[in-house]
Amino acid sequence: MNRPIPTVPTDAIEATPPPTSRIAMALALAVWLGLTAGGVALLQGSPPSTAVPLHHLRVERGPKPPPVQELPAPAAAPAAQPHPVIAVPADAAVPAAVCAPWLERWPALQRKLCEAAQLAPSGALSVRGAPIAWRDVAPPDAAGVAQRVLVVGAIHGDELTAAALALHWVALAQQASSQRPVHWRFIPVLNPDGLLARPATRTNAAGVDLNRNFPTPDWEREAAAYWEKRTRRDPRRWPGPAPLSEPESQFLHAQMAQFAPDLVVSIHAPYGVLDFDGPQTPPQKLGGLHLDQLGVFPGSLGNYGGLQLGVPVVTIELHHALRMPVRTEIAAMWQDLLAWMDKHLPVQSDK
Image (cartoon, rainbow, N blue to C red; front, side, top):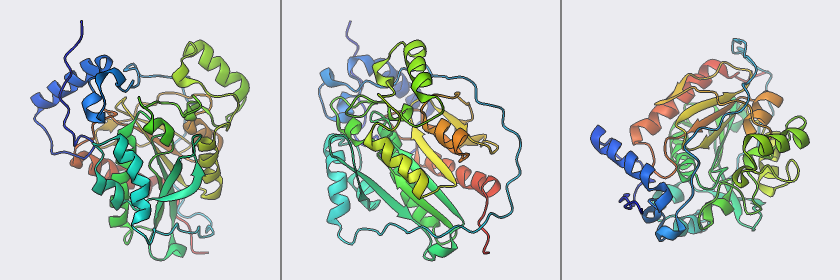
């Protein structure tokens, strides 16, 4: 029996005022029931026959991470060399061109939100040649930067809210840039091919799950074994033929080395939890998302960055892949992240 297609507001990717609990529950139930029947088709502007296949609602879990010792945040770390800040495009046509294919594919993504982020092509390209865009936000005196934070969205192309949250946070970072010595680097859409596909896909154009393609120990054996035994060869979670086989994962891997972040924030959906990998004490919550460490996955960014490099990786799992949190929740997550950074990330010394 075909299920009725729920009506989803076309501004769903823009943050909305808090709904009443009854409306919120009804909408959540309608979206859940409509996933297999094309319930999100109205949002993406395509017929039900091409509905976006989202994550299975069952949370994927891996082996437990190693125990983390309570570590005090260093009072100061050795001064790092200032990293060049990516210039904002002087021509407004540049960010408009970056946003154009996203807006055409996803009409619910607000043009004003995307273009205000002033994204520029990074020079890196996806499998199909789509540009991977980025944006830096830093204090006027880049030499005084104390921390570097890398924010990555839409590693999985069927998680549109991950990209939208990164765009919202660009604006919040700009507002705070004069008060906080942080160099932010935003990559809102790491997987443009998956985001632009019809239907949108978790994997890139080569069918690789980019979040299983990073060089973790014994990748050749562990990644294949996990894919075959734990996922039962789920094509949406194929780790690829080799670590860093994909241009998108190669680009992010290079950013980890060149930008040398003190923190990585990786945004996903729709499990509705907060995950963490790294040597520091994890944040207990960001807004309404509470800590629930999902485990260690071969080839994942959390495994590579948090466990192998010792760079903390905060993984945000939003509740919905196609509907943004309300504005107050977006701000609450941001403020909780800043508070955790103040307590647990080292501050560069002036020496």
